[in-house]
Amino acid sequence: MNLQRHRSETPDVNLTPLIDVVFLLLIFFMVSTTFKDNHEIKVDLPKATAKAVQRKEKPLEIRVTSDGRYFVNGKEVINRRLDTLKRVIKKLARGYSKERRVIIRTDRKATHEAFIRAMDAVRQLGFRKISIPVSAPDRK
Image 1 (spheres, rainbow, N blue to C red):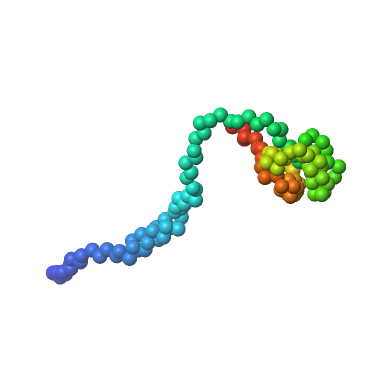
Image 2: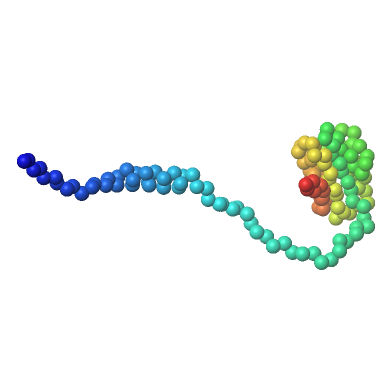
């Protein structure tokens, strides 16, 4: 009888593939994770307790249409040049103080050039209080 001895070998567990998989998962999660990065500045705005003051002076109003035409206090300016616009504003603003408010209303589709030309004319004439009204977006 041949008796062979069976050597009892201890099972060998190779950890190298397991470590490779763990490192690959670690790299995957590190690369695909997005971190929250807020660039917001939190501002605590003051609350107003007084009622709005009603102004008795009528402001000078400039309207800029979508096609670039100008209307000063409802009267159309004959052309779109800066010097013409300044002359019309100066003529209609006689008696206005430089502290009087100027409202520049623009159509949503008006060009930036037309809007900046109106602002430039007002600033060159020395008016300091310029208002640019906007409408609130529709809330659904």
